[in-house]
Image (tube, rainbow, N blue to C red; front, side):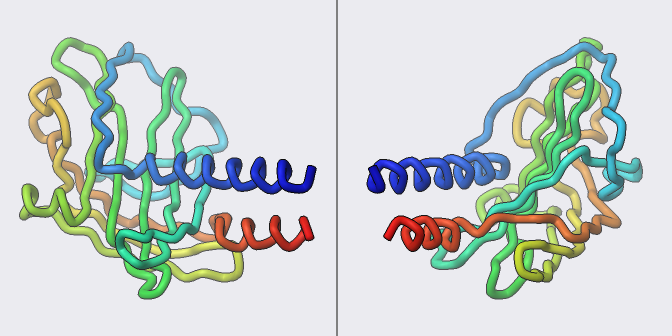
Length: 201
């Protein structure tokens, strides 16, 4: 019975880790359209400005995981804005050791040529930097037990897919300024797994 509980706990933690990582994954290729009538939910918190316009989030979450490919521990924070209908995301990935931002993903609704709202994806990391020489990101995070605070700035992030569908050419690139967050709770997958094994003994 204990073995079953251990396996179940590990699977739950891995599912959470994968879900958060996918929010900023460079393999994302989804493009959606929705009716051009969207309303943000109440109780949103202002996070930053995107192309000069305030952007707020409804909820935030974070996860700290081991990245074996890079040989580092990565903290990914995801800010979600619920709309009616749909939602938007902004994700930031930091190196736990250096506390520096190395990847950012923004998924927001933009006006399309056909009057619909396009789910536009903007991504910056080591791979996309090669095709986006004007782009740049910077940011730092501080960790206090299981909460994170920090700042970031994203310059000239280029849309990843089907920018030709946008109604406004200027929306093919976005700049995120004045990004600041405080006391965002995150889970440490490694510690939680260790706790599960310890409690099972």
